[in-house]
Image (cartoon, rainbow, N blue to C red):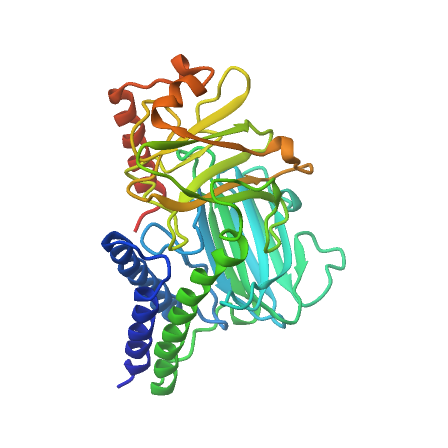
Length: 388
């Protein structure tokens, strides 16, 4: 059976999920199965939709295929490439806060973070007045060519991130072509190639589960609980992104108050993640806030309250049944170095203390009707920009 390698890989991945060290409850396990389903969707799709000879951009993560603490404010696109080939990327800039490009060498594994060959945002692109642009990626030097970026020999993937600070911003368009295959159809499927694709999907699935169970051990879980790091350049080579990370553990009657200055960066976002290292439900719940969504206090600070129970404030970050999880800030399209003064401070208090700990509590209150309207806006925005 051609599908046997995939079936065996699914069984192996299921055992990895069931043995995950963080599982403490039935909900943890059921979310693991949901996470596994998303991984199956993503890896099978990638095995059949991506070819090095005829590359296309596909979404490797999204509402139904989550991985790698996916940012609710970001659409991720990736294409398989070779370092010895020439590619042309054609697109039209949307109205999003940031559009960035990154060339990776190798792949994420449970023992390796891929190298970053080059990383830049669209400030390094010449973009026409109508928002259109054409960029080339290849092994040769620019030699005066506008929008040309040199590939290293081991380049393996081109990743594009489109980042929203307002979920009503309009997405752009983007396309990739391998220059020597433009107008040339792909090869017909053979039995051997079909078998290879099922095998590739299976290997990718197991690697995906192993990788993202290991990743937090490197960057999160060794930190003291209920703290966050100072802003730092994000590991992995994103050129203009700083991040602050941590992990939390809160009782049902506790809350975490996170205070951070509203940044001068075009994008500043905060989110929670489950111990599967994926975003919590950001459609029907407010588990993330960015600088376009968060309420800013008169002193220029953003104060967020992370808790299971509703504290009645606009910047409530819902833990939705997750007493433990990950904390993540991102600042993108930055144009200066970020310091501890730009980062968050964290205080854990009892839920009853929240009002007295917020200096502008009266302005922070929100009615149930207005809260429902906020959630409705999130649902509509996700439906509009993250179809299927």
